[in-house]
Length: 451
Image 1 (cartoon, rainbow, N blue to C red):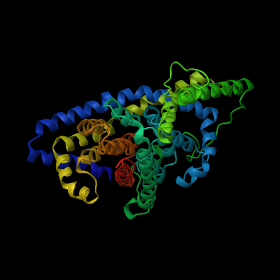
Image 2 (image 1 turned 180 degrees about the vertical axis):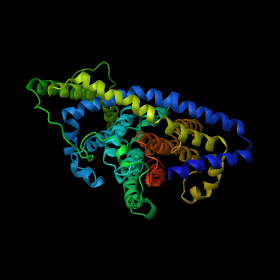
Image 3 (image 1 turned 135 degrees about the vertical axis):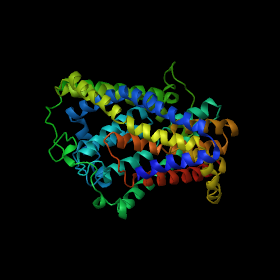
Image 4 (image 1 turned 30 degrees about the horizontal axis):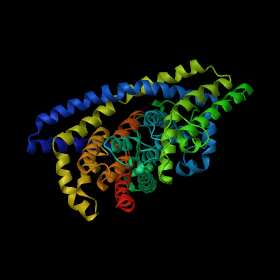
Protein backbone atom coordinates (compact mmCIF):
# COMPACT_ATOMS: atom_id res chain seq x y z
CA UNK A 1 0.00 0.00 0.00
CA UNK A 2 2.75 2.47 0.92
CA UNK A 3 4.58 1.72 -2.33
CA UNK A 4 1.47 2.57 -4.37
CA UNK A 5 0.71 5.72 -2.37
CA UNK A 6 4.28 7.01 -2.70
CA UNK A 7 4.51 6.40 -6.45
CA UNK A 8 1.02 7.85 -6.98
CA UNK A 9 1.88 11.08 -5.14
CA UNK A 10 5.04 11.57 -7.19
CA UNK A 11 3.61 10.54 -10.55
CA UNK A 12 0.38 12.52 -10.26
CA UNK A 13 2.33 15.56 -9.07
CA UNK A 14 4.75 15.51 -11.99
CA UNK A 15 1.97 14.94 -14.54
CA UNK A 16 -0.07 17.81 -13.09
CA UNK A 17 2.98 20.07 -13.24
CA UNK A 18 3.12 19.44 -17.00
CA UNK A 19 -0.34 21.00 -17.35
CA UNK A 20 -0.07 23.68 -14.67
CA UNK A 21 3.50 24.73 -15.48
CA UNK A 22 4.39 24.93 -11.78
CA UNK A 23 7.80 23.29 -12.16
CA UNK A 24 9.65 26.00 -10.23
CA UNK A 25 7.31 25.64 -7.25
CA UNK A 26 7.56 21.84 -7.46
CA UNK A 27 11.35 21.91 -7.48
CA UNK A 28 11.54 24.33 -4.58
CA UNK A 29 8.93 22.41 -2.60
CA UNK A 30 10.69 19.07 -3.06
CA UNK A 31 14.09 20.45 -1.98
CA UNK A 32 12.56 22.32 0.97
CA UNK A 33 10.73 19.17 2.09
CA UNK A 34 13.93 17.12 1.95
CA UNK A 35 15.75 19.72 4.04
CA UNK A 36 12.86 20.03 6.49
CA UNK A 37 12.69 16.26 7.00
CA UNK A 38 16.29 16.26 8.26
CA UNK A 39 16.90 19.70 9.76
CA UNK A 40 13.48 20.50 11.25
CA UNK A 41 12.13 17.07 12.18
CA UNK A 42 14.73 14.30 12.49
CA UNK A 43 17.63 16.21 14.09
CA UNK A 44 15.52 18.11 16.68
CA UNK A 45 13.87 14.77 17.47
CA UNK A 46 17.19 13.27 18.60
CA UNK A 47 17.25 15.16 21.90
CA UNK A 48 13.62 14.44 22.71
CA UNK A 49 14.05 10.80 21.75
CA UNK A 50 17.15 10.46 23.91
CA UNK A 51 15.34 11.94 26.93
CA UNK A 52 12.24 9.78 26.73
CA UNK A 53 13.91 6.54 25.68
CA UNK A 54 16.25 6.97 28.64
CA UNK A 55 13.27 7.46 30.94
CA UNK A 56 11.51 4.48 29.38
CA UNK A 57 14.54 2.28 30.10
CA UNK A 58 14.40 3.32 33.75
CA UNK A 59 10.69 2.53 33.86
CA UNK A 60 11.28 -0.88 32.29
CA UNK A 61 14.19 -1.80 34.56
CA UNK A 62 12.19 -0.76 37.62
CA UNK A 63 9.14 -2.77 36.53
CA UNK A 64 6.86 0.27 36.07
CA UNK A 65 6.01 -0.62 32.47
CA UNK A 66 5.10 -4.17 33.42
CA UNK A 67 3.02 -2.86 36.33
CA UNK A 68 1.15 -0.51 34.02
CA UNK A 69 0.66 -3.36 31.56
CA UNK A 70 -1.03 -5.47 34.24
CA UNK A 71 -3.33 -2.59 35.22
CA UNK A 72 -4.59 -2.02 31.66
CA UNK A 73 -4.57 -5.71 30.67
CA UNK A 74 -8.39 -6.10 30.39
CA UNK A 75 -8.69 -3.33 27.77
CA UNK A 76 -5.46 -3.82 25.86
CA UNK A 77 -5.80 -7.60 25.59
CA UNK A 78 -9.01 -7.11 23.60
CA UNK A 79 -7.45 -4.60 21.24
CA UNK A 80 -4.17 -6.52 20.91
CA UNK A 81 -5.01 -10.21 21.46
CA UNK A 82 -1.77 -11.36 19.82
CA UNK A 83 0.45 -9.48 22.33
CA UNK A 84 1.32 -11.29 25.59
CA UNK A 85 -0.39 -9.56 28.51
CA UNK A 86 2.91 -8.98 30.35
CA UNK A 87 4.88 -7.76 27.32
CA UNK A 88 6.51 -4.30 27.68
CA UNK A 89 4.71 -3.18 24.51
CA UNK A 90 1.45 -3.00 26.46
CA UNK A 91 2.73 -0.41 28.92
CA UNK A 92 4.58 1.58 26.26
CA UNK A 93 1.49 1.76 24.04
CA UNK A 94 -0.69 2.89 26.93
CA UNK A 95 1.75 5.63 27.89
CA UNK A 96 1.81 6.81 24.26
CA UNK A 97 -1.99 6.89 24.10
CA UNK A 98 -2.18 8.79 27.39
CA UNK A 99 0.37 11.36 26.16
CA UNK A 100 -1.62 11.82 22.94
CA UNK A 101 -4.83 12.32 24.89
CA UNK A 102 -3.19 15.05 26.98
CA UNK A 103 -1.77 16.71 23.87
CA UNK A 104 1.83 16.14 24.99
CA UNK A 105 3.11 15.35 21.50
CA UNK A 106 6.79 15.81 22.36
CA UNK A 107 6.50 12.83 24.70
CA UNK A 108 3.95 10.83 22.69
CA UNK A 109 6.20 10.33 19.65
CA UNK A 110 9.21 8.83 21.49
CA UNK A 111 6.89 6.64 23.57
CA UNK A 112 5.14 5.51 20.39
CA UNK A 113 8.44 4.70 18.70
CA UNK A 114 9.52 2.67 21.70
CA UNK A 115 6.21 0.79 21.56
CA UNK A 116 6.81 0.02 17.88
CA UNK A 117 10.23 -1.43 18.73
CA UNK A 118 8.60 -3.70 21.31
CA UNK A 119 5.88 -4.72 18.84
CA UNK A 120 8.53 -5.54 16.25
CA UNK A 121 10.14 -7.96 18.70
CA UNK A 122 7.10 -10.20 18.17
CA UNK A 123 7.03 -9.75 14.40
CA UNK A 124 7.75 -13.01 12.60
CA UNK A 125 7.64 -11.42 9.13
CA UNK A 126 10.07 -8.54 9.21
CA UNK A 127 9.30 -5.54 7.05
CA UNK A 128 5.56 -6.31 7.18
CA UNK A 129 3.25 -4.50 9.59
CA UNK A 130 1.58 -6.85 12.07
CA UNK A 131 -2.08 -6.60 13.07
CA UNK A 132 -1.00 -5.08 16.38
CA UNK A 133 1.13 -2.43 14.62
CA UNK A 134 -1.76 -1.47 12.34
CA UNK A 135 -4.14 -1.22 15.30
CA UNK A 136 -1.66 0.87 17.27
CA UNK A 137 -1.14 3.21 14.31
CA UNK A 138 -4.91 3.58 13.85
CA UNK A 139 -5.26 4.56 17.50
CA UNK A 140 -2.53 7.16 17.04
CA UNK A 141 -4.11 8.73 13.97
CA UNK A 142 -7.49 9.01 15.72
CA UNK A 143 -6.50 9.35 19.37
CA UNK A 144 -9.10 10.80 21.74
CA UNK A 145 -8.02 14.37 22.35
CA UNK A 146 -8.64 15.90 25.76
CA UNK A 147 -6.64 19.08 25.23
CA UNK A 148 -6.58 20.41 21.61
CA UNK A 149 -4.02 22.96 22.76
CA UNK A 150 -2.85 24.17 19.33
CA UNK A 151 -6.36 24.82 18.03
CA UNK A 152 -7.34 26.56 21.28
CA UNK A 153 -4.28 28.81 21.06
CA UNK A 154 -5.07 29.81 17.46
CA UNK A 155 -8.63 30.75 18.42
CA UNK A 156 -7.40 32.62 21.51
CA UNK A 157 -4.73 34.72 19.79
CA UNK A 158 -7.31 35.76 17.20
CA UNK A 159 -9.60 37.13 19.89
CA UNK A 160 -12.10 34.32 20.47
CA UNK A 161 -14.47 34.97 23.34
CA UNK A 162 -14.59 31.27 24.21
CA UNK A 163 -11.60 29.41 22.69
CA UNK A 164 -12.11 26.40 24.96
CA UNK A 165 -15.55 25.77 23.47
CA UNK A 166 -13.99 23.24 21.08
CA UNK A 167 -12.91 20.96 23.94
CA UNK A 168 -16.32 19.29 23.96
CA UNK A 169 -16.68 19.07 20.19
CA UNK A 170 -13.15 17.69 19.81
CA UNK A 171 -13.66 15.12 22.55
CA UNK A 172 -16.85 13.83 20.91
CA UNK A 173 -15.40 13.86 17.38
CA UNK A 174 -12.18 12.08 18.39
CA UNK A 175 -14.15 9.55 20.39
CA UNK A 176 -16.22 8.70 17.31
CA UNK A 177 -13.10 8.64 15.11
CA UNK A 178 -11.34 6.27 17.52
CA UNK A 179 -14.28 3.86 17.51
CA UNK A 180 -14.31 4.04 13.70
CA UNK A 181 -10.54 3.42 13.56
CA UNK A 182 -10.83 0.29 15.69
CA UNK A 183 -13.75 -0.94 13.56
CA UNK A 184 -12.00 -0.33 10.23
CA UNK A 185 -8.66 -1.79 11.28
CA UNK A 186 -10.26 -4.95 12.68
CA UNK A 187 -12.43 -5.44 9.57
CA UNK A 188 -9.71 -4.72 7.02
CA UNK A 189 -7.21 -7.09 8.62
CA UNK A 190 -9.55 -9.92 7.53
CA UNK A 191 -9.87 -8.72 3.91
CA UNK A 192 -8.04 -10.63 1.13
CA UNK A 193 -4.77 -8.80 0.32
CA UNK A 194 -4.50 -7.39 3.87
CA UNK A 195 -4.74 -10.75 5.63
CA UNK A 196 -1.72 -11.69 7.71
CA UNK A 197 -1.46 -15.17 6.24
CA UNK A 198 -1.08 -13.62 2.76
CA UNK A 199 2.02 -11.65 3.70
CA UNK A 200 5.60 -12.58 2.78
CA UNK A 201 8.54 -11.31 4.88
CA UNK A 202 10.54 -8.50 3.31
CA UNK A 203 13.73 -9.66 5.02
CA UNK A 204 14.74 -12.84 6.89
CA UNK A 205 13.36 -13.15 10.40
CA UNK A 206 16.78 -13.64 11.94
CA UNK A 207 17.89 -10.15 10.88
CA UNK A 208 15.70 -8.45 13.46
CA UNK A 209 16.80 -7.57 16.96
CA UNK A 210 15.06 -9.33 19.83
CA UNK A 211 15.68 -7.78 23.20
CA UNK A 212 13.69 -9.89 25.65
CA UNK A 213 13.18 -13.59 25.01
CA UNK A 214 14.51 -15.64 22.12
CA UNK A 215 11.09 -15.79 20.55
CA UNK A 216 10.21 -12.19 21.31
CA UNK A 217 8.21 -13.04 24.40
CA UNK A 218 8.51 -10.89 27.46
CA UNK A 219 10.97 -11.78 30.17
CA UNK A 220 10.16 -9.60 33.14
CA UNK A 221 13.18 -8.41 35.06
CA UNK A 222 13.40 -9.43 38.69
CA UNK A 223 13.66 -6.25 40.75
CA UNK A 224 13.82 -5.87 44.54
CA UNK A 225 10.97 -4.44 46.55
CA UNK A 226 10.60 -0.69 46.72
CA UNK A 227 12.52 0.62 49.71
CA UNK A 228 10.60 2.37 52.52
CA UNK A 229 12.32 5.71 52.04
CA UNK A 230 11.38 5.63 48.34
CA UNK A 231 7.74 4.91 49.17
CA UNK A 232 7.75 7.94 51.47
CA UNK A 233 9.47 10.16 48.85
CA UNK A 234 7.03 9.08 46.11
CA UNK A 235 4.13 9.81 48.45
CA UNK A 236 5.47 13.34 49.01
CA UNK A 237 5.92 13.78 45.25
CA UNK A 238 2.36 12.64 44.53
CA UNK A 239 1.01 14.94 47.24
CA UNK A 240 2.97 17.89 45.85
CA UNK A 241 1.65 17.12 42.37
CA UNK A 242 -1.95 16.91 43.64
CA UNK A 243 -1.69 20.20 45.53
CA UNK A 244 -0.14 22.00 42.57
CA UNK A 245 -2.80 20.61 40.25
CA UNK A 246 -5.56 21.71 42.61
CA UNK A 247 -4.13 25.24 42.82
CA UNK A 248 -3.86 25.55 39.05
CA UNK A 249 -7.12 23.78 38.17
CA UNK A 250 -9.47 25.07 40.88
CA UNK A 251 -8.27 28.56 41.87
CA UNK A 252 -11.84 29.86 41.78
CA UNK A 253 -12.70 27.41 44.60
CA UNK A 254 -9.55 27.77 46.69
CA UNK A 255 -9.70 31.56 46.47
CA UNK A 256 -12.72 31.47 48.74
CA UNK A 257 -10.47 30.55 51.67
CA UNK A 258 -7.15 32.21 50.78
CA UNK A 259 -5.87 34.30 47.85
CA UNK A 260 -3.64 32.73 45.20
CA UNK A 261 -1.71 35.62 43.64
CA UNK A 262 -0.17 33.81 40.65
CA UNK A 263 -3.31 32.14 39.27
CA UNK A 264 -6.37 33.43 37.51
CA UNK A 265 -9.49 33.33 39.66
CA UNK A 266 -12.13 33.74 36.97
CA UNK A 267 -14.84 31.18 37.58
CA UNK A 268 -15.71 28.87 34.68
CA UNK A 269 -18.98 29.52 32.90
CA UNK A 270 -20.07 25.88 32.98
CA UNK A 271 -19.02 22.25 33.26
CA UNK A 272 -17.33 22.28 29.85
CA UNK A 273 -15.25 25.33 30.73
CA UNK A 274 -14.33 23.82 34.11
CA UNK A 275 -13.24 20.60 32.41
CA UNK A 276 -11.12 22.54 29.94
CA UNK A 277 -9.50 24.48 32.80
CA UNK A 278 -8.67 21.23 34.60
CA UNK A 279 -7.15 19.63 31.51
CA UNK A 280 -5.10 22.74 30.69
CA UNK A 281 -3.73 22.64 34.24
CA UNK A 282 -2.97 18.91 34.07
CA UNK A 283 -1.18 18.91 30.70
CA UNK A 284 1.93 20.98 31.63
CA UNK A 285 2.32 19.13 34.94
CA UNK A 286 2.33 15.63 33.48
CA UNK A 287 5.86 15.69 32.04
CA UNK A 288 7.63 17.19 35.10
CA UNK A 289 5.85 14.64 37.30
CA UNK A 290 7.01 11.71 35.13
CA UNK A 291 10.56 13.11 34.89
CA UNK A 292 10.73 13.00 38.69
CA UNK A 293 8.75 9.79 39.26
CA UNK A 294 10.64 7.42 36.95
CA UNK A 295 14.18 8.04 38.33
CA UNK A 296 12.92 8.16 41.92
CA UNK A 297 11.05 4.87 41.59
CA UNK A 298 14.03 3.20 39.87
CA UNK A 299 16.43 4.49 42.54
CA UNK A 300 14.12 3.07 45.19
CA UNK A 301 14.51 -0.32 43.49
CA UNK A 302 18.30 -0.09 43.76
CA UNK A 303 18.89 0.56 40.06
CA UNK A 304 21.89 2.55 38.82
CA UNK A 305 19.66 5.26 37.39
CA UNK A 306 22.11 7.47 35.53
CA UNK A 307 23.95 4.68 33.72
CA UNK A 308 20.67 3.00 32.76
CA UNK A 309 19.29 6.33 31.53
CA UNK A 310 22.36 6.85 29.35
CA UNK A 311 22.04 3.35 27.88
CA UNK A 312 18.42 4.02 26.96
CA UNK A 313 19.19 7.50 25.63
CA UNK A 314 21.73 6.06 23.18
CA UNK A 315 18.83 4.51 21.27
CA UNK A 316 17.41 7.98 20.59
CA UNK A 317 20.14 8.89 18.12
CA UNK A 318 19.88 5.57 16.32
CA UNK A 319 16.09 5.77 15.94
CA UNK A 320 16.12 9.39 14.74
CA UNK A 321 18.77 8.62 12.12
CA UNK A 322 16.92 5.47 11.03
CA UNK A 323 13.71 7.35 10.17
CA UNK A 324 15.41 10.03 8.01
CA UNK A 325 15.09 8.14 4.67
CA UNK A 326 11.42 7.40 5.35
CA UNK A 327 10.71 11.02 6.28
CA UNK A 328 12.52 12.40 3.23
CA UNK A 329 10.70 10.04 0.88
CA UNK A 330 7.23 10.77 2.24
CA UNK A 331 7.57 14.53 2.75
CA UNK A 332 9.10 15.06 -0.72
CA UNK A 333 6.26 13.09 -2.34
CA UNK A 334 3.67 15.16 -0.45
CA UNK A 335 5.42 18.40 -1.44
CA UNK A 336 5.49 17.35 -5.12
CA UNK A 337 1.78 16.52 -5.00
CA UNK A 338 0.91 19.81 -3.27
CA UNK A 339 3.11 22.25 -5.18
CA UNK A 340 2.25 20.85 -8.62
CA UNK A 341 -1.36 21.92 -8.24
CA UNK A 342 -2.65 18.34 -7.95
CA UNK A 343 -4.06 19.05 -4.49
CA UNK A 344 -6.03 22.02 -5.87
CA UNK A 345 -7.45 19.87 -8.67
CA UNK A 346 -8.44 17.20 -6.17
CA UNK A 347 -10.20 19.81 -4.07
CA UNK A 348 -12.27 20.87 -7.04
CA UNK A 349 -13.24 17.29 -7.82
CA UNK A 350 -14.35 16.59 -4.27
CA UNK A 351 -16.53 19.67 -3.85
CA UNK A 352 -19.72 17.95 -5.13
CA UNK A 353 -19.17 15.08 -2.67
CA UNK A 354 -18.76 17.50 0.22
CA UNK A 355 -21.92 19.33 -0.79
CA UNK A 356 -23.78 16.01 -0.75
CA UNK A 357 -22.46 15.35 2.77
CA UNK A 358 -23.42 18.91 3.78
CA UNK A 359 -19.82 19.76 4.60
CA UNK A 360 -19.00 23.43 3.79
CA UNK A 361 -16.68 23.71 0.78
CA UNK A 362 -14.56 26.25 2.68
CA UNK A 363 -13.40 23.41 4.91
CA UNK A 364 -12.02 21.40 1.98
CA UNK A 365 -8.44 22.78 2.24
CA UNK A 366 -8.30 21.76 5.90
CA UNK A 367 -9.77 18.32 5.19
CA UNK A 368 -7.29 17.65 2.38
CA UNK A 369 -4.24 19.06 4.14
CA UNK A 370 -4.70 17.49 7.59
CA UNK A 371 -3.50 13.95 6.69
CA UNK A 372 -0.57 15.37 4.69
CA UNK A 373 0.99 18.24 6.62
CA UNK A 374 0.74 19.44 10.20
CA UNK A 375 2.27 22.87 9.51
CA UNK A 376 0.10 23.29 6.42
CA UNK A 377 -3.01 22.49 8.47
CA UNK A 378 -2.08 25.09 11.07
CA UNK A 379 -1.64 27.71 8.34
CA UNK A 380 -5.04 26.88 6.82
CA UNK A 381 -6.72 26.96 10.24
CA UNK A 382 -5.22 30.37 10.98
CA UNK A 383 -6.36 31.68 7.60
CA UNK A 384 -9.93 30.43 8.11
CA UNK A 385 -10.11 31.94 11.59
CA UNK A 386 -8.96 35.31 10.26
CA UNK A 387 -11.34 35.11 7.28
CA UNK A 388 -14.52 34.18 9.15
CA UNK A 389 -13.73 35.33 12.69
CA UNK A 390 -12.64 33.27 15.72
CA UNK A 391 -16.18 32.57 16.95
CA UNK A 392 -17.74 31.71 13.58
CA UNK A 393 -19.23 28.24 13.10
CA UNK A 394 -16.76 27.46 10.29
CA UNK A 395 -13.83 28.41 12.53
CA UNK A 396 -15.06 26.07 15.25
CA UNK A 397 -15.49 23.32 12.65
CA UNK A 398 -11.99 23.82 11.27
CA UNK A 399 -10.47 23.89 14.78
CA UNK A 400 -12.34 20.73 15.73
CA UNK A 401 -11.20 18.99 12.53
CA UNK A 402 -7.62 19.97 13.29
CA UNK A 403 -7.92 18.50 16.78
CA UNK A 404 -9.85 15.43 15.60
CA UNK A 405 -7.39 14.08 13.03
CA UNK A 406 -3.67 13.40 12.75
CA UNK A 407 -1.07 13.86 10.05
CA UNK A 408 -1.56 10.26 8.95
CA UNK A 409 1.23 9.98 6.37
CA UNK A 410 3.76 11.56 8.73
CA UNK A 411 2.82 9.09 11.48
CA UNK A 412 3.13 6.19 9.02
CA UNK A 413 6.56 7.35 7.85
CA UNK A 414 7.95 7.92 11.36
CA UNK A 415 6.49 4.95 13.23
CA UNK A 416 6.95 2.31 10.56
CA UNK A 417 10.27 3.79 9.45
CA UNK A 418 11.66 3.37 12.97
CA UNK A 419 11.42 -0.43 12.65
CA UNK A 420 11.96 -0.80 8.90
CA UNK A 421 8.35 -1.57 7.92
CA UNK A 422 7.75 -1.07 4.18
CA UNK A 423 4.55 -3.10 3.79
CA UNK A 424 1.97 -1.19 5.80
CA UNK A 425 -0.99 -3.41 4.81
CA UNK A 426 -4.33 -1.87 5.86
CA UNK A 427 -2.98 0.81 8.20
CA UNK A 428 -3.27 3.70 5.71
CA UNK A 429 -6.83 2.89 4.52
CA UNK A 430 -7.97 2.42 8.13
CA UNK A 431 -6.33 5.68 9.20
CA UNK A 432 -7.77 7.70 6.31
CA UNK A 433 -11.25 6.25 6.80
CA UNK A 434 -11.06 7.14 10.49
CA UNK A 435 -9.96 10.66 9.50
CA UNK A 436 -13.00 10.95 7.24
CA UNK A 437 -15.33 9.78 10.00
CA UNK A 438 -13.70 12.29 12.35
CA UNK A 439 -14.28 15.11 9.85
CA UNK A 440 -17.95 14.23 9.38
CA UNK A 441 -18.40 13.88 13.13
CA UNK A 442 -16.69 17.25 13.73
CA UNK A 443 -19.07 19.01 11.30
CA UNK A 444 -22.17 17.38 12.77
CA UNK A 445 -21.15 17.97 16.39
CA UNK A 446 -20.26 21.62 15.73
CA UNK A 447 -23.62 22.21 14.04
CA UNK A 448 -25.28 20.65 17.08
CA UNK A 449 -23.27 22.59 19.69
CA UNK A 450 -22.72 25.93 17.97
CA UNK A 451 -25.12 26.07 15.01
